[in-house]
Structure formats: C-alpha cells, structure tokens
Length: 240
View 1: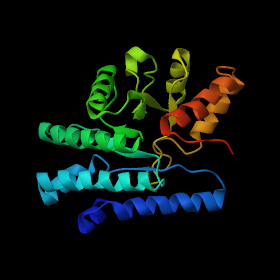
View 2: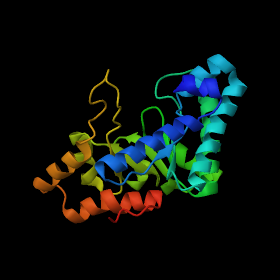
View 3: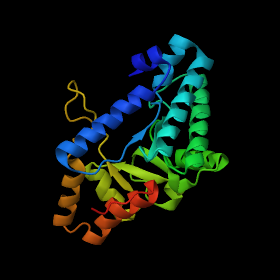
View 4: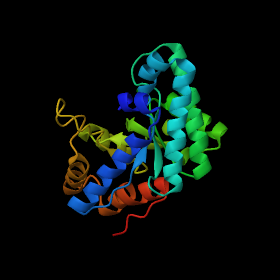
C-alpha cells in the first residue's frame, strides 16, 4: 500500500479500496461490517526514506485527515490502526510517530470516534502513557482501543482504555478471570504467504463457543464482550 501512497501522496484510494471490500462482504455473506482506517504506523519508515522526515509526517497527518472525512460521511467508525512501529526503531522515529499519534487523537476527538492503537508490546505503563496522551488531546480513555493487547483487563492495568485482546485460548481464559471489559480480535492478515496469521477469521466465534461449552463464561458475559463493549466504544448498534 505504501507504493500507492507514495505515488498519489494520499491514503484516500487505499481507504476506498477497504470500503469496497466491506461492501462486497456485506453483499456476499449478508453480515454487518464496520470499518476503521488510518495511516499504518510502519508506513512512516518507508515514507521518511523516500520523502524526508517533514514530508512523511505531513503525509501521515493528511492520511488521518482523510480518515476524518470518512468519519464525517459515516463510512467508518474509528481511526486506525495508528501509533508506533511494533519493532525497535530509532528514537527520532518514535518521537515523530508520537507526534502523528497525538494528531490522530486530536482529530478523532473532533469527530467523536475512537482510535485503534498499534504499538510495541503492550504493558500497563504503556497504557498509562496512551491514556495521558489522549487526555492532552481531549480524547477520553474509553475511546482509545489498544490493538493486540494482552489480558490487561483491570483498571490499574489499562488505565481506562479499551483492550482488544488477541483471542488465543490462554489470553481469553486469563482475561475472563479478571472481568469482561475487553474486545476480542484475531489480527487476521489476508496474506497467502502467511495462511491463518495471526489467528484465523473464525477464531473469535470458535473461542467464544468453547468458553460457553465449558461454562467458563455465560451468555450474559458474552453479551457484554461482543455487544455492549463494541457498541459503547464505537458508538454503533449491533441489533439485527
């Protein structure tokens, strides 16, 4: 996707391609689909190499502005993934990524949508940092979704942000022992070179049914995780 962004100096067509895929899914499978888009944090590294630091930052911010316009048109329900690369990078890249992230939080607050945050491995200290950054940007903690989160469910672990927990068996069993204020995700990547990565698209319903069958959770708790939490976070309605 970065080749398209470099060529067009815009994320708009990348976003429109994602929205087109969502419409195809709705038509072919007859299910509801809610979309979030944003300039992927790792893109910044290649954009910086090709365009220089300032132009790369401005292009990433433009990508956020383009996502905001789609929010205004009610075509997407959140901005992200935005944030920082998930692997070690130079300190200046972290500084620049934080600048872009802060801008994304400000713009998300402008249109009252959540941000979905992609970063290095999640810790309680990092959750605190993200919530404090959101506060400076005017974005409430519950509008900060931490993608690829471990089971940091308690308030003193996540500081009020919404953890989106990778739906491995170990993660979810640990999560429900603490509470039910979290989302579940697969981080599925539709890449023929990595079949099933990170987890397959059927994992969330499969995991949920397993937990119900073993009476690890009950239907009310499933309702909280899969309906109440996403509705409150994304300001959507999941009724048929």
